[in-house]
Image (cartoon, rainbow, N blue to C red):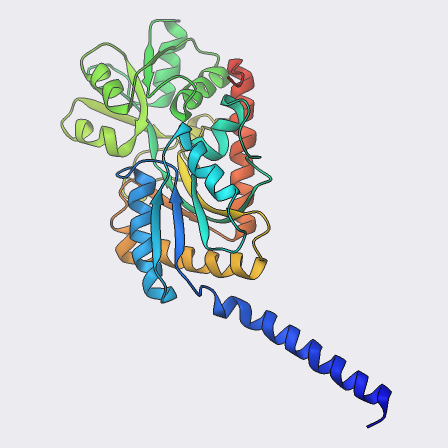
Length: 324
């Protein structure tokens, strides 16, 4: 074979090998265990969801999916561990609204770039949050809450799980949009805030459906509206805040999945497909009360995440909150 033809032949063979390897890469992943890093202690919502998904994805992958709790620093310890790991798809962060949004505005000197160091894979679930009032109050809707607050400025109070958190931010957003004076009372958790309301210390709470529903059933609390963008299918008669106040946008409680930046797109897409499939499995959905699946493509989840960052930034500026 002439020299130049031999060279051309070898070049074609090498290109076929390269493209063949690239096309088989997504199918070959994973070739070893995948670690889901949960930046919080065992027992929380993200941990419970991660363990359910890990079992489902282990079956699908044929490789172990291991939950690795790395608690500390409101998610900073776990987030840094993933940001510093190899971008190969084997170390995944189960991010959340605190670690991947609030810390940007509340924490100085993060040991990683909270946006640039992570590649979105898929959304997890969004917790259903609501405004509820003491059942003894003659307030049965968001409109009545706003009217009462305007009639009696500074007399109504609402509790949250703490200053600067998503529940507090949502309450302040409602006040700013409606021009009302409702006094915020921070508690150390959702349960103490609810106890404060049903004992008469405060008028209302912004909380999760899971926490308040037993008191609603017992007739001690009244749920007025959900803070999310769509109604909750299990309680279809409860309206949304934005149905009464269209401009309202609350800070949402959510989790989602991230890889280190630089992870190959085929691997991201394979992980996305597996997460979305597992999230929508009937046996998973049935075990996650008071949540809605976010899911979506990597691009859709990225838009959701960036929207949450923008919203939290607006609320932080409104409240004059600066990183500490």
